[in-house]
Each structure stands twice: as structure tokens, then as C-alpha cells.
Length: 393
Image (cartoon, rainbow, N blue to C red):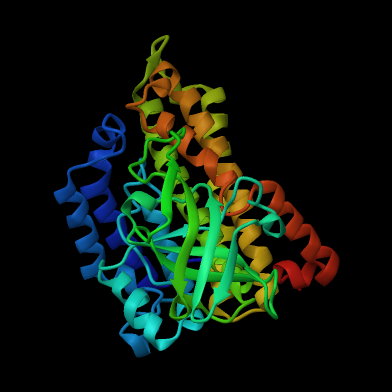
């Protein structure tokens, strides 16, 4: 089958790319030298553009005023935001389709639809010190007392906590008929008992912090429980499927930017009387970069298209893992080669390759490490066979 983007998807892609190049890329060095920050007025303007353009409702059902764009179109959009460093592409929130299945009408009104207007900003408190890739090791508890749950937990890597108004917290039910089952809850970041234990510095220079957050007898009303007791892991898997696919998309955008920047530099950098682009060792690195990007893009687009075709959910889960695994590892290879092509310049923080080398490294870790993706893929192969895993015939 062909993976040429449909006309509508290409139009969305071009609109997103124009915005990224015009508004976001010129701010990269300023952000890098200022702890990831840009002027608040610009940050708000970027969110306003995303809201006005419809990016915040691209996965929202049409019945609720959303666009419900095909997943392939959404991937094409998100890919363009991967072209910019310093998390400047994280300039808008989104209401994801799984939320409309998980949340009741009241929660949609209070939390989910306000995301699309920029009135609510969510972060996710899921990972723990000893429970990242292994959710069975999660120690967070939620004990019900009448119409209230009491949550006790310590959560790590709560990304974007400093920009959030609310968290989605995952905990295990303590007591009752569903003892030990996983559940999700909405929780304000300023709820009594919520505290930032510390906010570690990370390799990248983002204005989106990832603090360690503690919950000490935090009271959450029954009305803020997402779904039924025991539904938590199912919703988390749905969130992971989307996040893994979109990580792959952003990695494709990063690779495209790096290839363009490195190849243009190679054409103008003269060594021993001629551009280094004429040297075969440089050409080999560029060729390998293009191959990595093309393979990643095809895998990511196919996984997105499989969603739009309504293929088996377990197969989709495996395909998202395939896309994330390959694209995240390919992006790091491309960034490393780009640094090498730039030479000493590539080791300067003002250089796009240096920033991407630091930034794309985490894509092999968060939302499931590369090793976890390999296990998911292998388990799918052994249980469902090759066709059931990748859809081949």
C-alpha cells in the first residue's frame, strides 16, 4: 500500500510546519540559554494559535465539537512539532479519544473539554521510584471512605507539573472487592497533602519540569475517579499507545530537521579546498540518516493508518511499540551522526544537533523503555504470530 499522505493530511502538515518554522524554531537558542523559558506572552500566543487552529480538538469526537481527525493526519501534524528543540512544541494540550471513553459526562464538562480551551492543563502522576516499566510494583494506594478516596503515594517524573492545573494519578485500590486493582483519578496539583519533594535537573533544557511529587492522605472525591475500580491499566494502555505513536512521530520530525541542517552545513563547510559533502564518509553518514528516517516514517505512518482502518487492538499495541522502538533509536543515531558532521560546532549548545542529541535520548526511556517495547513485540509475535503482530499477509 502507499503511504503518501492524503491531501487533507498534507495540508495540516504544511500548516503545522509553517508555524513551527516561523514561531518556534527562532526561539530555540533563547530557550536553551534561559533554562528552557521563553517570554510568557509568546508561550500564551502559541497556545492560542493551537486552540484557534484546532489542534487541541483534533482527537475530540465530532459529536462534542471536535475534529476527530484521522490518526494518520494527527501523526503528520505531531511530526512537525518534533522538528523543534527545548520542548517548544509542547505548546498545547489535547483531549485524547480514550478520555471520552473513560470519563463520564460530568468529568468531560469539568476536565476534558476545558483542556481544549486551555482552561485545564493535565499532567500524569504514574511512574514511581520502583514502578516504571513494571506497574505491578506500584505502591501508590487509594482507600475508599464513603464518597472519598484517600491517596498515599510518591510519584516520579511528573512531567509538566509546573505548568499543570490537575494531575491524572494512578494508584492501587486498598481494601474492598477490588483490592490491588489499578485505578485513575483526577487531582488538583494544589490539593491538600500534595507536595513537591524535589525537582531534579535533567539532561535536556526544558521549561517543563519533572518533579518527584508526594501524596499524603490526599482526599479525592468519588466523582473524580476515572471509570470503575480496576479500569486504570486499560486506560493507561490506551494512553501509552497514543504516546508511543506520537513519540515516534516527533522522532521523525527531529530526524528530518537534523538531516536538513547537517546536509546544508556539509555543502558549505570547506575542508582541503572542497565542501565536506563531497567526501564519501560524510555522504555515507547522510545516507544512513535518510534510511533511518524513511524506515521510521513508513513504520509510523503504517501504524497510524492501521488505527484508522480499525485493526485489532492488540496488533495496534504491538505496532505502536514497533514504531516507538525503531524511531527513537534511529533518531539518536541520526543526532549522533549530525554532531559528527558538524564537528566542533556540533558540540556547542547553540547547535541544533547538540540539543537533539540530548533531547531524543529520553525517547528510548519514557512511555516504556526500548527493552519493554521489545518484550511487547516478542510476546505479540509468540502469541499472535507475524500476521497478528504487523498485519502482513
